[in-house]
Image 1: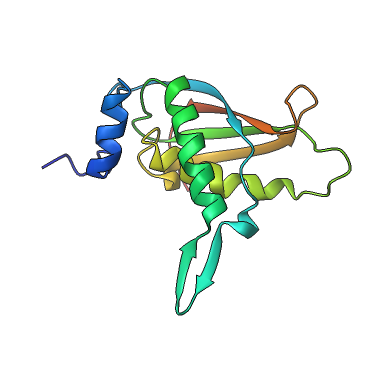
Image 2: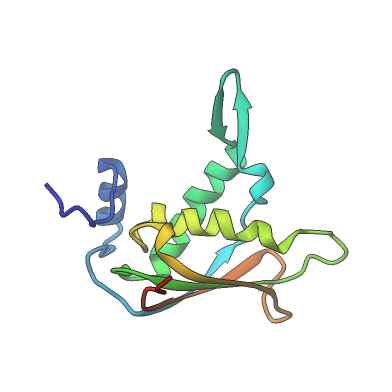
Length: 148
């Protein structure tokens, strides 16, 4: 049985990461990754009958972005972390920058980069001119727990 605080992987995910030669046991202190732009947080869930399920768009993005992320990040964070998200603007499209945080936080957890997204101590999201409009850059840094 894995330790209580170990990242939870499904057997399928573990096989996928192992087949790609990705190490999810190596503890890291920081990482930077360029990812495809996530769908808006307003479009990641839908209602099907009496169930709330992930949308097809969100599932496709999670799969693609997960592979991109694991190819750029070789390890995981053991505890608390800070997340910085930099996004490129899409011309005149009105897009709520706050809608990037949830899908990216979920991605970090599902890819095994962080144990649990509730361990995030700080989140910064900003528009940046040097990032392509179809991408986001994430910077994750290990940090100490903030005492309340």
